[in-house]
Image (cartoon, rainbow, N blue to C red; front, side, top):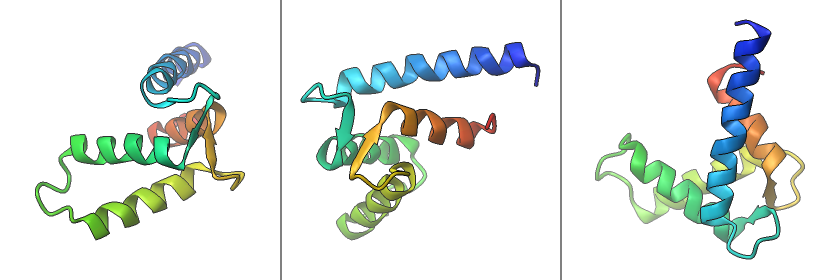
Length: 95
């Protein structure tokens, strides 16, 4: 991947993150707290369709907790835009 392609992907990640924050950062503090992140992660898991109807509240809560902990790299119980960007970039393989 060229540096130009990498930068285009990173710019697109910024747009995606901005949209996520517009929808889920209810208090406008530029971080997703546990409740805001729970809603976002839960919505992503449901929309992924990977689990069909097999998601239970117990499984749902466990997965949400695991995903939150993986993204919250500084362990301050909030997800920053930078942490989200790093996680998305790792998932798509540009970091």
